[in-house]
Structure formats: C-alpha cells, structure tokens
Image 1 (tube, rainbow, N blue to C red):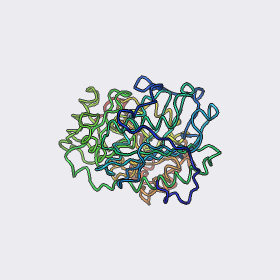
Image 2 (image 1 turned 90 degrees about the vertical axis):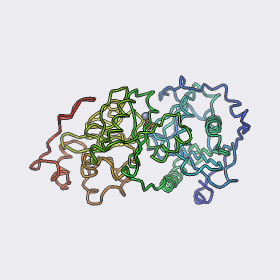
Image 3 (image 1 turned 120 degrees about the horizontal axis):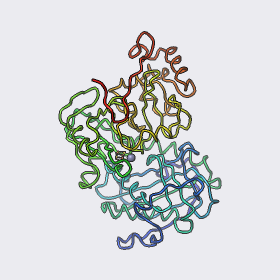
Image 4 (image 1 turned 180 degrees about the vertical axis):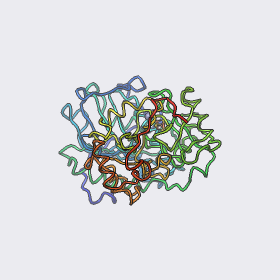
Length: 453
Ligand code: SF4
Ligand SMILES: [Zn+2]
C-alpha cells in the first residue's frame, strides 16, 4: 500500500535489507536452508518458534501482492522488516502480521497479479521449517524452532524474490514490507486498520469481469493439488472461482499464456447437458481423464449432487444438513461447532482428499459473490446457516429478502433449533423444499456413489 493510503496509520520505522539483484547472485546466502518438496512438513505448536496470523488472531492479517504499473516506485530487491525477526522472539510466540509485496515490470498489469501470487505460493512451498495454511490473503504461518539462526523473515522474502525473478523474468522490480505485529510495534492496534485497508484495496483490485460462462467455449482446469489429492481436479469458469480463492478465469488464462506446460489446462466445455446444474460434456470428459478415471460426472453449480472434488485447501465449505434439507456454509476461521455437530476442522478432514463427496463442496469467500453460487441446489434460497462474521463479510451478495432468514451460530446450531428458526423466520426453504411444513431429507449416496435417477 502506498504511503498516502496509510498516512492515517502510524507505522514505525523498520530495518531495511537489500537482496542481490544480479541474476547470478539471486540465491546467494540461502544455501543453509532446505528448499524443495521434501521439506514440506507440518510445524506442530510445540515445535514452533513463531506463528503469524491464523485463528488466534481471527485471521486479521494479510499478504497482499500488488502490481504497480508505473516505473520508478518499486525499489528492486528491498525488504523492510518492522518488528522482531524469527530469532528475536520467545519460542512459541504468536503475532498478527501485514505483508505487502509490490512488483513492477514492463507489460505486467493487474491481469498478471494472480499468476504472480500463485508463483509466490509455490516459492514458499517446501521452505525448511516453514508451514502455511489458509489462503494467500488470509494466511496462517508457522516457523519451526529447528531453523532459528538460519531462516529469517528477510531470507524468506529473498527466497520469494529469487524465485519470482527466476520464473517470471518479466518482473523487473520487487519489494517487500513485512510488519510483525508484536506488542512493541503496536500489536493488533496497528495491524487491524491496515488489514481493513488491505481488504478494501484487494476488492478494488479484483478485475471486474463481465464474462458469463455462456460467453466462452473453453473453461480451465487446475491440478496443482494432485500431490495431496491424486484424483482431484478443479474446474475454473468465468463464474466459478476455485475454492483456494486465488485463481479466477482471468488468472487461469494468464497462467496458460505465461506457462503453457504448467498445471493449468484448457477444458473445452463441450455441450451443455444441464444449464441449472452446470453440467457439460467437455468438463466431464476432462475431469474423468485427469481424475485417474475416478470421477465420471460433475455438476459445477451443486454441492449436493455430483459436486466437484475437494483437495484440502478450500477456504470454506458448503455442506448439506439433512435435518432441514438445507445447506450450511462455514469457513476455516470459524472455530465453533456447525449444525453437523462437528467443527470445521473435522468437516474439512472428512471431505478433503479428492473424492466426490455428495453434499459437500469446498468454496471460497470470493465464490459467494458469483451469480451461479450453488445455483443447482437453489442458490441462496437453499442456504440456511452460516457463521455470523462470514454473513457480515458477504452481506452484499446475499439477497436482501433472505438475509435475516439465514441462521448463524448466535441463532441456532442444533438442527432442531435450526428447524424452529427457519419456520419462525419463514425461510423460503419451508415453502420451496419442505413438504407440508416438514423437511424431507435427501438420501445422500456415500462418497463416489451415484444418485438414483
Ligand atoms: S484448489 Fe484447485 S485451483 Fe486451487 S490450486 Fe488446488 S487444484 Fe488449483
Ligand atoms: Zn488444494
């Protein structure tokens, strides 16, 4: 973010570092840190030196990558660290954080932002002693005690810098500012206003796409998460943003332009079999091939019937609640119990892995803006429950007449109470889906199973 934008917020001065910018020396000084897929590991709480963001801070932290289209603003290879470094904190510390990254390059425009973000996530995948969960913008990071004295926040930025400069030579300049929100620098009091600004900023940056699924002949597919979920394939259409939340149709297009041999592939959509459910012959063929011939059919607009598969990195999930024949929504940061009687973490564990889990679909917060969100299941008229803060976050996308009729954890969690709530509020589900004022639960087939005709 520019200084003018954050003028109201007093940000302490930090320490500045300059990375080598000569292409032959980008990786200098990094050879004492393990890099690569074999270093991907979990950092348990007991083993962590420091944790940034995550549930403890209600995810009020961010990583924002900005494309600056004007030359001369981004200071190449410069990193400013505000707050303590990894080795300067007590083992087991946890702080909120605000990480701003800016890039400049001739010909690099907002269109390329998602692609660069993606590469940045890749560069961090497999840094020794580093673990990250959650989406790019709302991360949760841990650093292991085992790398204290070797890995530092500037070095982590240098890894990103060197990687991006190597894989996207069009990037001419890249700089970093990382605020580690310890008490001394202002803690949450400093981070929260920055976070609010950052979120606004991101929304403004999102390219307004006017494309509809019917305007294009080709969708895109992504199989990056195959390493964790071998049969998993994501389908990306103008209206469907995958649930990792970082790639849109535009982002997929740019990725293929810059990296034609990569994980993103073209998916000619073929014939539309069912407009409401989002069922296409070309999609089914591609998914079948890429899922090791495990998934025969997907409805891209449904969480209930033949949903797309879930790897594990979804920001949130839509889940069928049989007792009320409705759909609940939850995101990772909601730590309470859902109407299924389990917490999100357990739900996520059971539905990830890449099989077709009827009744469950990973979703991103961004995908809730889409006109086709759960269209095949009835869209927002079928949604009966969601955490209060998520409801607030996506309020502008929920049809006004339904908003007050969707329960939150403050209204009901137990399905019995939820049913009463929906009746009392006269939620449209009562009229549209229930029979004589009573829900008729669907018999959901087991994962990988088939629905009766
Ligand atoms: S969730 Fe889907 S779109 Fe996102 S990285 Fe994984 S496979 Fe690709
Ligand atoms: Zn994934």
